[in-house]
Structures are given as structure tokens and as C-alpha cells.
Image (tube, rainbow, N blue to C red; front, side):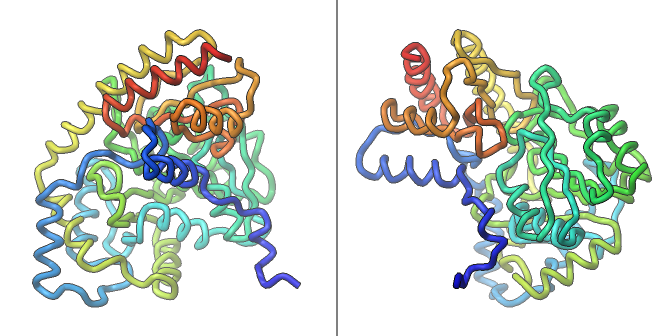
Length: 388
């Protein structure tokens, strides 16, 4: 007899964290690893954010807070959503969670029953299908096409809908592809979702990391109908370099927001109290830090694009947001896990196999790492490609 719940038989550990851990272990042994693995900014949390958390600690703000976050932070998020996204929410429609990953899981758990289907465009962030399975629902992946910049087309969405479809997960800017949906593209997808009363989980954690003069469009903002169907997910990890602080948030229709609040009150309770005061400072502080970060990432993005486009046996779509390249390696004749293992063991380059994202003929490179690492890693990757 197994003591483990049956649903765990299909759950896979995060390969993005696994490759990062393997690279760290090799580095700790003294090996010179060029790591493109983790989706984590290499820049430190800004000092003024750290100072606000330190002050909160010194003032004894170490006790429980309301389960869905302190009023000051929820008000700051409310103002941010209105200013940046033209979205108006009541305070009780906003929930602060223990990271945007937690936000996604709360939202899925609040909406999905066993037997429900959740449509996930592929390539996808590795945790989406596993979250759906943990909630007892069934992920249904739609393979998007490189010629469509890896973006879900409305006709593909419509064709995939069944009588069990409950939710669509959208991620723009996207991890791992870097694709960004336009307002017109979102409007067409919302039209399909509205025709079947399908909830949209819109993961916008990379919202500010957009290049080429493009602008982020929040799914819920495209129409009143969209807002009634959409759960907006965002957080502080990426644009404020606050990955370890574990702060994300949801903004949702009232009924869903209430369910998320109940789930959180019985599971994690509040996010870390003093970290929340750091997030308040992040929202109120000088936002030039974001523009500076985007400029730095864009420089790296353009460098990597020029290098990757000159390697004959790989193909890439230029990423428009986030900080990743999904590199098509199908011409090499290796599955992605085999390729990533050889790349790490023989050439000391860490990249995440595309199988983690539903595309086994690719690998993901993150450019949230220094230019010196990028240059060294791409030199080695080019050597690897020439050998294959």
C-alpha cells in the first residue's frame, strides 16, 4: 500500500529548479559553469526596498497580518492596477499571496473541480500543468506554432474547447518564448472565452519586461466582459528582483476573490509580514530602477539574438518580453533532456530542456545573467552545435 496520494503519480518535479541545482552543485565543486537556467534576475533587490523591510522588522512588524495582505500593500496594488493597467478593483478583490506561483495555484484551486479541463498553450511555464493536476483537474495542451510567434490563435482555442473546459491560462510576456500578445490578439481570445463562459487566468509576472517599444496589455482591460472572466496574476519577483521575498497577488471577480481568500486563510495564512512592507516601498519608490533593468536586459537580448541567429543548426524567434530565448534544436536529432545533459556535463553550460515546457525539440536560455557569462556560454554552445 502506498501512503502517497494517487494524484502525485503524475506530478513531475520542476526541471528549471533541477537544472539550476545541478549547475550549482558542479560550481560548488570548482567547475566553471555558464548557467542560463533559472528565471531569476541577477540584480540585487534595490536598497530602498530592503531598508523598508528592515525598518518593519525593527518596528516589530513580525506578527500575523490579515490573511490576504496588509491594507497598505493592497491599496498600493489597487493604485498600480488602475494606473498601469486601467483596471479598477475593490480592495477585497485583491489578494496578496506567497509568490505569483502561489497566486496561480490559489486561482486554479478556487475555480477547478476534478474532471474540469484547463487549456494551456504550449510551450508553457513548467508548473501550470502540475498545478492543474494537483487541483484534481486535467490540463489540455495546445501546441502553438513558431510561425505564429508561439502565440495561441483564436481558432486553435475554439477547436480545443470541450464541454469540460473551465479555464484558459495565458502568460504574456511568456515564459519560455518571450512572446507578447497584442490588444487585438487578446480581444479575439476573450471573445472565444466569453462565448463559452471560460475563465482566463492571465499570468502577467513579466509585465514590465518588454522590448522594441511594445506595450503590455492586461487581458482584463480589453473589455468589461474580459474583466468579468479574468483572474489577473502579478507579483514582485521579476521587476523588483524580489524572487526570495515570495510575494505575488491576484485581482479577480468578487466570487473568485472570496474563494481565494478562504483558501489562503486555511493554508498559508498571510504572506511574510515584514516582506509586505518592502513591497509597499517597491510600489511607492522610484520606478527608474525598472527602466534601467529593461535597458540592461535588452542589451543582453540583442547580443544573444545576433549570436544565436548565426548558429546554423538552431533557430530562434526574437523574444519581445521576459528574459528568455527558446532555441529550436530539432536539427540536432537529440531530445531536449539528452541535449541539456550533454551540454552541461561536457561543455559546462546549463540550460533548461524544452521538455519542461512541452517542447522536446528545444532548450531555454535565460539572459538574466551577466554579459560575461552569456558570452562564455554562447561560445561553448556554438562549439557544441558545431560538433552536432
